Length: 84
Image 1: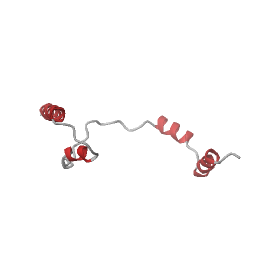
Image 2: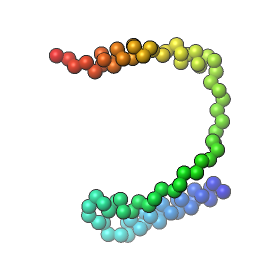
Image 3: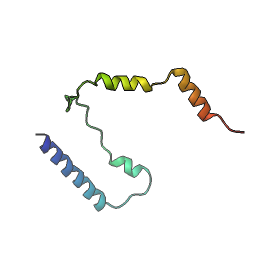
Image 4: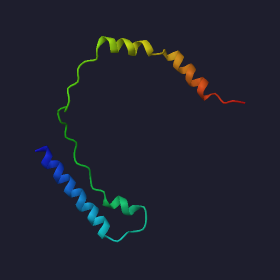
């Protein structure tokens, strides 16, 4: 079913490209905007993948490399300070 949807989308895109190539080029920035159609409404789908929870070792590694908010502000200040 999903494959059929993808094939239909590809066919529609190819038809749009052919129409763009066949139609004479219009001047002006609005010509591209006129060709866009309204986006499809958002449909929430179930996740495609299920990931395992991170291991305690990975969580520990991440915690060990974090810096404090004060250190982050200091680093930003040093990096954005103008040189005379």
